Image (cartoon, rainbow, N blue to C red; front, top):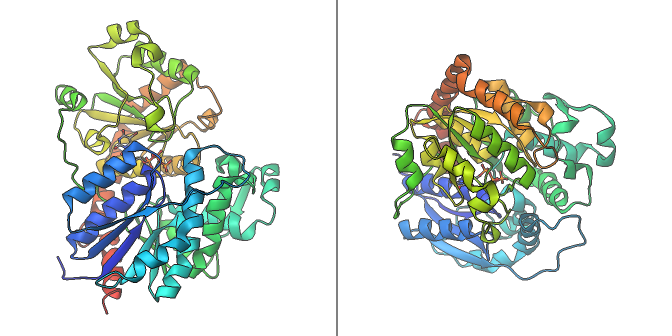
Length: 457
Ligand code: BUP
């Protein structure tokens, strides 16, 4: 690879959905001879975050890791008790404390790459230190444009729900049903964090984003042509960020089980690291898998934060389900190596909440997806899944956290997911395009190399 040696500070916000793309980017930067300072907020919300930070840092002793001790702040009066939302806000409000940590680094920094969820705070730190500042967007370009549009152009978001869709210039209509409900409430903590960072975007030098040209061509060119917002920094697609190798120092039963399943026969079911399903929905899904003929690997979460997730599987799903399905299914209630699962030849389809990282992993592996969005950016992502032929989405299911979907409906969609030959082929095509983007001559790699070259004085 080229010899490029800038020193870059990486600063993720909270949750595995944010940490993961930063660690992947860190790994790419290291392999391109960059020096990396990784700043991680402490304490983290989940055990998964702290475990991934320690294992990354011990695998890469050359990384300068700074734990950023968060002060205990009174959360503002707010309509959420979601620990991740509160942590987003705490980190954003503490960013000014970064200054002394970064001032004295040696060699001096060449740039800061900060999470979009801290961009508004990092801008003045970067200006004070005289450093280029790029923000990393961990979601899709389409969700970025929706968020930026609402933050900049919509004076009264509470009125949005009166229309069926909003028209974003250069981007076409977005159904109001795809807008995360908190966005209609400007006082919601999730909304204030997203909106204040989006409004600050004209102050960053560039927006790195975990997507690729082929996946979202219209959105990327609309954002970059100035037809959406006149003053918008360059939007630089560098995805899908490639998973780095994770050291496994334990036996994983589910991977051994996958090893003996027929090719593309298993339905992988997971709703990401922050989505707990209601007990009623869990039962519908259980009954669907029980009655269906497909093999399955189901990652179950009954609590939003991993350390609170204590109920055992028999209590949640009943013993007879496990007795009856033991030869064709597995349920796991712990952190799994999802990137290895999605790369496994036995996996045929993925029932997913449509977290952007999960989708980018499905895309890289050409695995077809049944989109079942639960909250946040996930309905916007589901539209992309359907549009590019990566998978299916039944939009009438609504938001997973609000509506109960019956077992017959889930079964019908899983049948389609596994049997539709056309879908199998279009998903593989997405896989080829995603891999191509990351190759040396690929669109995403070229964009990132250009940014890095620009940082060498
Ligand atoms: Br759960 C789980 N193993 O057991 P998303 C997740 N992951 O490797 P989220 C595992 O965490 P937001 C597990 O591969 C992906 O890279 C998964 O990120 C990995 O969804 C990441 O898909 C999860 O973006 O975050 O965590 O719900 O809501 O911020 O999108």
